[in-house]
Image (cartoon, rainbow, N blue to C red; front, side, top):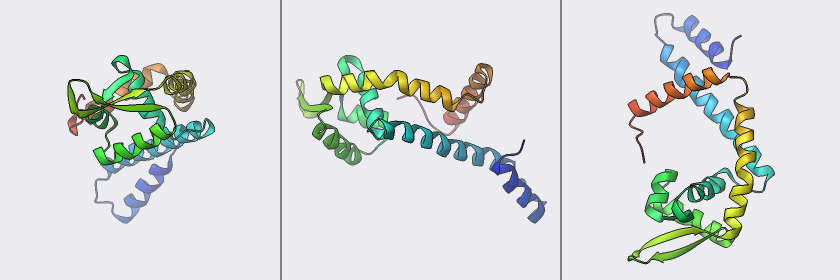
Length: 164
């Protein structure tokens, strides 16, 4: 069975038979898969009145100690700039899902904590989100998922993506 990338690779093979386009096959598929997976996640959260980034922020806090993180660590974990994070936190504060407080040990540091409403929303959606991700990956067996995850981990590390 061919995919959209196979069509592109075939076109390159005809247009430039001398070019090695094998890397394009991998990069193109990772890119297309990323967009399709993001669409599936975005549509799921839209059905529940959230943006995917909102759940990402809530879930990051939910899995942290005491559902609390400093803005600097939250920025690194979410891979967003401090300015973008400030705007996101403003939005979540307005929705009553998080609160910001000065850190008790360093008043220059801002801590973000889930409200009861934010904790409940993230907790309620977690199982549904996991079921949606299972649905998105249903075309792969567990062994195939494990192999793909291992290869993607190796690729990410080689590209400089390291532990937070």
